[in-house]
Image 1 (cartoon, rainbow, N blue to C red):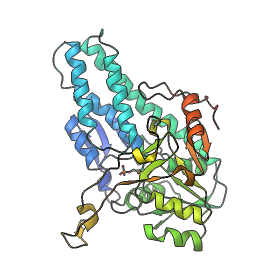
Image 2 (image 1 turned 45 degrees about the vertical axis):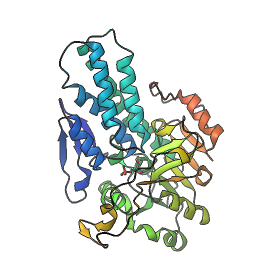
Image 3 (image 1 turned 45 degrees about the horizontal axis):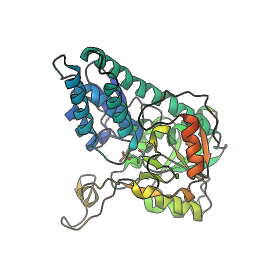
Image 4 (image 1 turned 180 degrees about the vertical axis):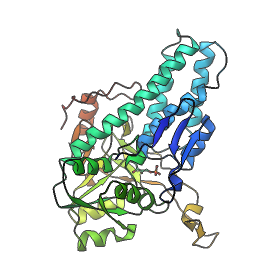
Length: 365
Ligand code: MRU
């Protein structure tokens, strides 16, 4: 069963507070843009596609407070709300695409009244959400074809329903394979420091009756060697024009291990996770988070309280280590500049204006 991660409920955005999982399933109602900004910053809502949806509805929360009838002033106000939301987290490009889309829509419609423009923006946020539901299922269908009965899979972080509207990217592939009647086993890496793999992926897969075994991150090599892993599926936060992929810290390490052990390594990500203006992964802004996330474990100090810490939240896997990128349009095998560009062309990918998702544009690959 999909997890409903985000829901617009009239005048507020209801999210699952993911920091409370797996012990409590708690919903949080964000009534204003600051509450949502804080929820994004503190990872109450997280995962690249979910951040795109949250940002779009964040704009709606922001514009709800606008009073007055001057459209030009309103459009500037929309810009300020977008600028504010853009400061929440830097790496997942879905957030920025959604904000560009919302801002662009406002700027393109100066002839509308403030109320009409608010309605147009709301409808766009809803479309971004609804497209995610369809796109994740399409990626699931493409990726499930790679999964054979009896396989052992591995994943890192949480690229499931909790990281999207409801179905997931990497875990969406597993849900689609399960729906197709395939039996398989999954090793989930716990994903230090914030344990998205242990807290969220293990919870989600168990809830969906998928055979999941939790391991610490430093067990991955030994599990590949001694237990046997047939395929790895991960999500992505930003994929550049040459196929380099930023994802949760530890993904690069996993890709290197996969190459050594000859395990196919697949990234599962929608068009909205591609940043085609960025040439290579070296340009991706990598979020660095608080030292206390590393010095502590489950709320308890586990290191000298003043020890120096380096805490990048993401790393970049070079495209050479990626067997394929599963998208809603099909699978880009051995991604590199030309194959990624062909996805951009056939999908009508645009950085400045969203073209509606059409399932049957399957020219690529
Ligand atoms: O810091 P997080 O929890 O937002 O990081 C999330 C990830 O790295 C996910 O793997 C990625 O966003 C893909 S989600 C479908």
